[in-house]
Image (cartoon, rainbow, N blue to C red; front, side):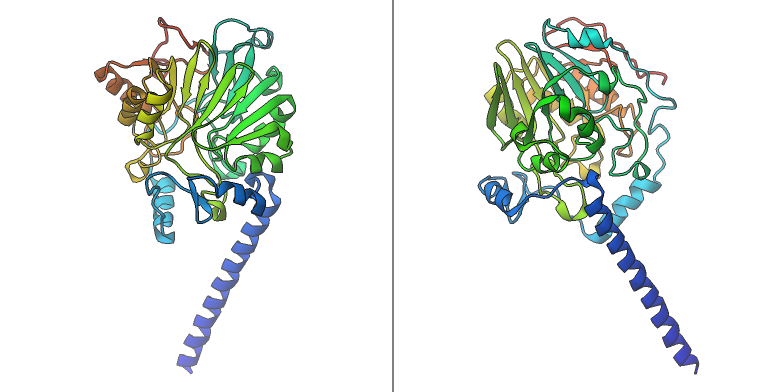
Amino acid sequence: MTHFKVKTSKKRIMTTLLIFVTLLVITYIGFTNLYPNFGGTFTKQQKAIYEQSAQFSDGKFRNTEAVPKELSFTETLKLGYAFFTTEVPNGRPIKNLTVKKLDSTHVANYNKEARMIWFGHSSFLLQLENKNILLDPMFSKVAAPHPLLGANRFNEDFPIAIEKLPQIDAVIFSHDHYDHLDYETIQKIKSKTGHFFVPLGVGTHLEAWGVPSNKITELDWWQEATLENLTFVCTPAQHFSGRKFNTGQSTLWSSWVIQSKTDNIFFSGDSGYANHFKEIGAKYGPFDLALMECGQYNEMWSDIHMMPEETAQAGLDVQAKKIMAIHWAGFKLALHDWTDPIERVKAKASELNLKVITPKIGEEIIVKDTINNYTNWWKNI
């Protein structure tokens, strides 16, 4: 009798677990299919196009090196557990970062030398040749598919309200992760944007969010596009992509070269350290300014996010006259002190005799400026 009760109890537990897992799967499928933030999925026709890329094989985009490592379910759980349970004493500022405010009329009427405005993390407004260009615009509070799935960004305000941005001639995206490509941001800017330039596959998300296909140009690594007298080059990066569990590596990731007749800018996107930086420098350098990823790193995933010392070396590799650390001071997406990126990259750059500029959010960045008075504004925050 006792043996029968034990067997019945085990069967009930297994049945309950099965029902629970089934409900989770159904909820996930419904959530990802009905909630627009997850974006689109490429069609068979689009896949046929992507198969012509050297970066695409077996239904996925790949890095030149065999990274990132495919994690098992257990390894994924361990990594997630470490991220959500490890306490980082200075993981985020104790108060919201203050930003320098900009007058919307002054921004709309700007027609001087090339300049940039940082919005925090990896988002910029670039103004050159009387054009307004956004780089990885991400203006939501949380870098996640839903506000309940992440922590708020470090800056509550922006240099200029997104609704007051002038007409945007071009938007450039480096890849489709939530801290770079954001549904709500696209809804706010798509009607005032002339054209979107993205790596292969990222256009599927934009189309799913109502951007007409004729306003989207998808590029493979080393391909170029022009916007009047500007040239945009989609260059390599060592990273990955995906907005839900079953669409990993379904879109390409990249860095970008942005050139006018007088200015040359490099935007690293997200990347681990690899030989592509030297290749880009040899082909398109030297650069007046390189915006270099420096944040959200860890030794466990250093193949897809550079450590700060590698960021400085990569700045030398691309032949940058000066670099700016990006991908920090926006979100807590790793286990390091929030000021660790800027402190370490500055120290290594000093060793390498490489210039690092440190504007605060909203402060004007003149691309060819050789003298600046930027402060160590993050100190004592």
